[in-house]
Length: 349
Image 1 (cartoon, rainbow, N blue to C red):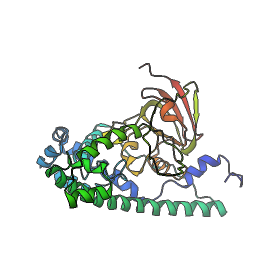
Image 2: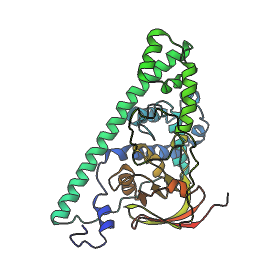
Image 3: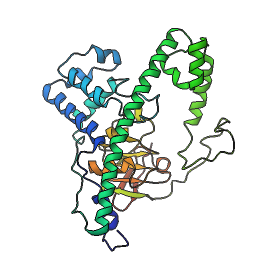
Image 4: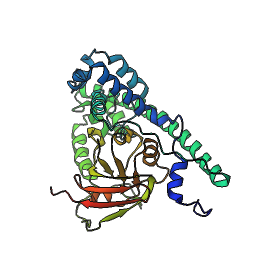
């Protein structure tokens, strides 16, 4: 578009590949918003707010129980970090869905604003834009199907975990996620006690979790054959007032930062500007109520960019070190058209 003289080409590119009709990855959030509205209109909100555990969810037989069960059947595998088998989803932990319904019902910003549209460009630019939109639509459908396949595998692995925990070979069902496939096979076939190995893996995982989101890792021999040491020793400068990235969804918003390290905790993002190292398709549930989103990794066609455009939320991706330079409570101005994040004030905490 720039080469063909299109004025404000970055903003126009965002408009050309937004407003895609029938985008499959939008259905989980649109249906969730309907559930939240039904909870508010039917008076079921107080009953849902009392649900804190899986047991309390299964004991609930209110007006929305069938609708919630149907939602889980259709979209229960779509959640943040859904491509990690150990991640909790609405299917494995349905109380998480109830919490989201309550958050949406109480949050007036949890709604879908129509995506910014533009008259389709003519000529070669228009052809490319149309092909890009078609490709995005097909890819998002395959991603939702992929989450369902992972959901099937997750259910099977958890069932094996329940059996191993019952036999005392691991301490809890979810400990199975600290074992490799051949180790699980040994535990099943040979009845080996895996509790000591699981505890060692848990300690290693705590260290690996502190590693930054590297663009790429190059190995000469075994992958991660050494335990990471001295993580967190590197200091990052916080003197810059402006962070730059890729403009992905038009608009400008000023608001409070919320750095999300663990999306599985279902943080309340209402009215906040989310900052993250990376995202995946399941982050749609966090983005819908937010004012905007900033991500260290990603591109113009990454999932964060696609969903934020469809939701009409300003977004910038490829913002190096944003999750380290910014802290929860900071106030920033996010320019999703120009690709800049301007720090207005720092949180004193």
